[in-house]
Image (cartoon, rainbow, N blue to C red):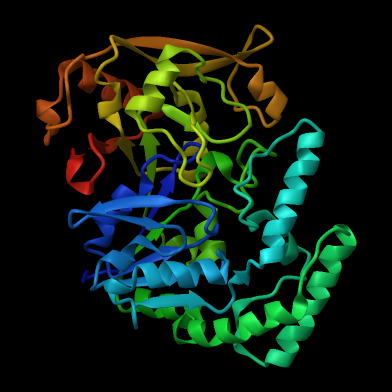
Length: 426
């Protein structure tokens, strides 16, 4: 497709639900390869294409494009029954020969999901609700880092050896959680069938992607979750279990850092968060309700309303430090259409002293005082606007202020749910 291979990474820059998939969908329509590098089916993404709504949990967005190859990398954890169901639902997209699953990816078992529920109950007893999706993602990554995890390659190999590893892992989990009940033989019978259903898609994806780069393919990496939920750089412990900042691309796909050409941060025009955790610009008033209603802020993963607040540029400056965004895609600008004034968080103070860093301690972050600048609203619809020059003057002032504070150009602005409502500025 290109004279030179291009690797583009698209990352959520906040706490998730920024509208990443719409931009990925735009890129996937022209890409040769689209990849997932981390996370599991703990994130749900909806795409509007061809006058139809598609929902994805594990499959890369590239599956929509019949000319695009899709890769699920080694950093992804896979609940095989969920993946097979997603493949069945999307079978009209003729993914045969277009989907490649890393043999190094770890498997999420049903008992990991049970354990996820046990752990969240324990956290609740300690008055710390992480708010996991109960999909078994965290326990699977725990099995991985303690070197007890089971990978796709194990399932593809000698089944007797896979069975032994499965029994050992179940035994380890039951020692930690004595009330955990697993019908081992019934589960193993299921996995015999899963192995054959999955086999056509499994490959060694590091070699595959290296070959794609040498063949000058255009590659898009779609991040799941978001930068402020990163296990290392996010608001720990209220984070996900994987590296969802740019570093996760190399560890989750085997693409060397030098091969990454650009990193795009997706930013919602206001801020939302699911579950507990510090949220400095959170609102608990009629403006929050306005965002929830107008922005349709219901999480499909948890079926709960998202917490909402003003756009936090101080947190985004930190997000940019970690990821060094080449440009930003600003989503849901149209949600702000009916507000007479709009606030932007531009600084933090802690115990009366202005700070120049994003606090690592969650309790400190929860207690910061936010410095705001107030911008005038535009009180007119932006939904039918298809060029930057046609945006209301005050909307352009809002966009310019974000660019000024972050020192990162905004390249796209979303004013609706589909990729056709993305305004390209340059």
